[in-house]
Amino acid sequence: MNVNDTTSAAVLEELRRRPADQRRILFTGATIVTMDPDLGVIEGGDLLVEGDTITAVGRDLAAGDAVVVDATGTILSPGFVDTHRHAWEAQLRRIMPDVDDLGGYVMATLVGYATVYRPEDMYIGTKLAALTAIDSGITTMLDFSHNSRTREHSDAAIEALLDTGIRGVHASMGPHFGDWDRQWPGDLTRVKDQHFSSDDQLLTLRLATLATDEIAGPALAYGPELARVAEDLGIGVSVDAVFGTSSSEAILRWAKDGILSADVTLIHSTGLTAEAWKAMGETGTTVALAPTSDAQIGLETAIPAIDEALSVGIRPGLSIDVEVALASDMFTQMRALHAIQRMRAVNAAYGTDQQPQRITTHDVLDFATLQGAHTNGLAAVTGSLTPGKKADLLVIQAEDLNNMPLNDPIGTVVLGSDTRNISAVLINGEPRKWNGHVLDIDLTALRAEVNASREYVLNTPAA
Image (cartoon, rainbow, N blue to C red; front, side, top):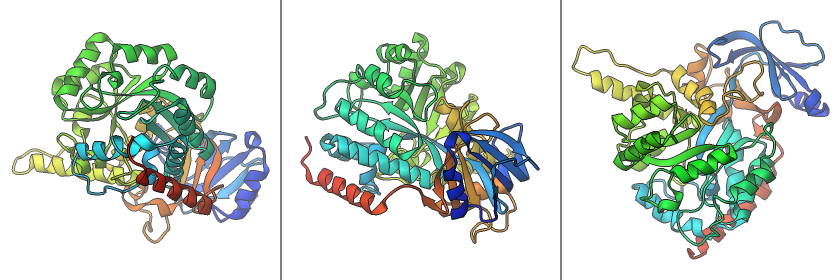
């Protein structure tokens, strides 16, 4: 079957007529930005998806019985990977767009709104965040779910990820403040057995924790005890609020204790000492940067730690963080980091004979895709359009008004495109967005649920 319109209804109908495990899709004539170092960019290329997997990338691939999609005039890109988002907060979007500092966020959100969340509020916020992620081309999202007040709260957050079809990482942590059942981290054994029994599924599990006890006390701070929990469960660890001198000292302790490794992701990592960065580089620790969060909320130095990471051989992932004050999409993160780093590089060299050491658009797309997958422990699964990886990909319209003519495909993805240009999103080979619309959602019903949850949270006194 050949259809000229990349995302026509006829193509979608034909795709859905076929059983998912027997489905074959051949995209033809696209500019393929593989983000695979060995494959690079393929102009006029073809990409074959069989079931949930990319099986071939090249030119003039044989179609066989595949549904053939003429993708001329488009860019095929790996889906973006969000390495850290507090998804449950989504119904509070932009409620504090000009938040002054971390303390203001903590007092309003974690001390206030979070304490009244019911399991259904966790579900609605997480679902809204995940659907928005898909709409903006994020195919993998790590949900740093730090409001697990009961086992039902945890289950609701996981079910929301499942119901959206996103490749989700549920990173579970107990709440900072207010009443809760104190079931975490003990409940993680049940959570894993109930929801993560298979190694071949869309969702994976991580332990979420904080760097130090300054914000919420020692129970939530990473150390040998929580490291043992993660090791016993065979899961990775994501550590938030990694800032400044106290976090630097903690990092050196973790390195000495042997609990700093490639299975550990440090989030933000602003204002750290050179000694801490050295330990992170030597242990293969991964880093999740939050460019707009660091800059806008003003976390420590307020400068995303990209140069510090690269100086010790760490290529970081990127993340959204909190939608209560920040944008929801990866385009914003890429552009913010690209502009901030290049500004710093030129400023550092100004008035000298030194050449600025600038990152490129290729770098930031690498951070947003392949390195994000590596940060989330999923580099073998997603992050590049490599045969053998799962089919998590974007179809980006390169001939739309804001993108034409196509001169540099990576530059167009990073600097030219936005959510409106993403005509299709596949996750695990399954169409999740088509013809510019996220599939299988009732927007009217969702809007009512989101608004009802928002009204409950805003009008219920903090516990």
